[in-house]
Image 1 (cartoon, each protein chain N blue to C red):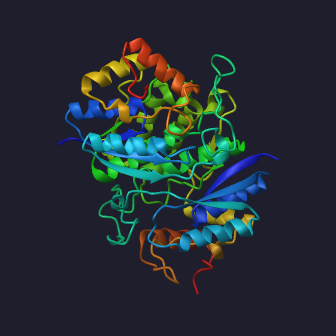
Image 2 (spheres, rainbow over the protein chains, first blue to last red):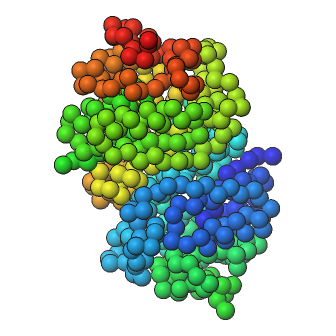
Image 3 (cartoon, rainbow over the protein chains, first blue to last red):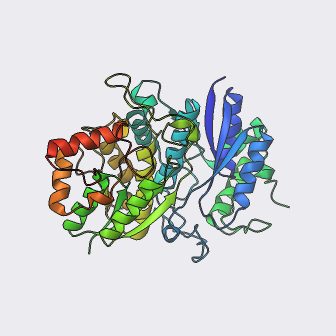
Length: 219
Length: 219
């Protein structure tokens, strides 16, 4: 059975990617990152999503620099809106997806998995540079050049199937795949209920509205 | 004062890079990786080298997959020689330099450092794909494309000044810079004395011999 590493954040997009990979017949191992997020709620959500899909999950604790982002630690406030269109918000985490993909690459090589799935997309998102298509094209080249499997010609393939999709489209795909969106968590803040005000809540609500579906986290 | 992140392994090459960066006037912060090496001796060496240079050092514990390399954990033997010329030995650690550079990039962005120094070189080495010049060229492009600082035009520069140099040449440069080679550690095995048999000991001995200098670790 073909093996894949799936990056799971606890959010909607990576949950949908996991179910897509499973539907394509991959045996999936999930990597979940504990990188100093403001809350552990999304890690718990990611664990539950992996369990619901019947997949192994490993939580990797990674020491990111706390001063790099308003998402790391609780010293800084999470902003509610961006200052201007095109700005990269303070929730940007320096080199986050490079680090996540690099570790996924290491685990893929070590376990003989030929594919890495990531739920990144470049529409209805916060303008992070490491969510853009060109970033994934270069990372794929790096993986081919900088690893044993790449040099030997059986390199690890990076797949970001939602890269050019919007949130509503991902939600519709997820629903058709039976993704347990009630287990997912998008809010930048922790707590029992989503804050409904941060940018991540904004894009989630917009996505469900455009998809014409009720968010199961809305009571 | 211009700031740099220096990757420090405890070995000769990164020690020489640190002293080179200092000579160029950089204020250096060192990153040392505890990634499941067979022994902690090289981490201790790296700490001492940073201290001798009067630089801050941070040890980052990174959960690499243990099954990926004979250098990780003690289940597998470290090979004494390579099977064939051009082979990548079992001491290869999947995606090691990609992960190290990615974390360095994150710390560089978070702390406002404009340069990362790494001691990689592609001569007198073990054939690791992530020590080759083309790998660093692609990583530089990735850093420019996938980070906020890169997108905003003040990207982090990756410098591997010894990339096309051999061990003997690095040793000669190090001696002229006053690098405390007696604090460095190259042997893949731990213990009180270098084994003198592993590939890393082989290249170190060859380098000192060619440089016409006595290795201070030789009694």
